Amino acid sequence: MSSEIDELRRRLKQLEEENRALREGKPFRRSDTVTTRIAMYKNHPVITLEGSFRPFSLGIRKASAIVEKIDDLVAFVEKYGAGLRPGEENEGS
Image 1 (spheres, rainbow, N blue to C red):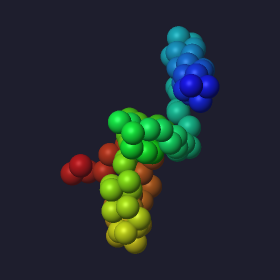
Image 2 (image 1 turned 30 degrees about the horizontal axis):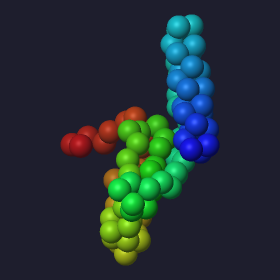
Image 3 (image 1 turned 90 degrees about the vertical axis):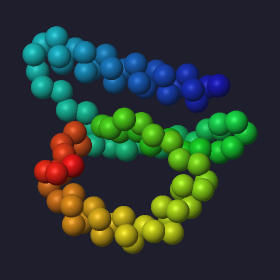
């Protein structure tokens, strides 16, 4: 319960900073940092990734598939993600 409250406080602070920057007309760039949070969903562990993208969660099965194919994912990012910053898309995406 305490970790959920801490997470809500962190998110509220982030939104307040973004709102202040928008009101002042300053560009706001969210952190490139990706954070993870482990929780339970229907009595199963899930990991949630959050950053400058829409948060998403993975269970054990999908996380295991990623671990199994990590080399393919690294090659994919190296080939198609060069120079890509959060919030941008490559042509043809």
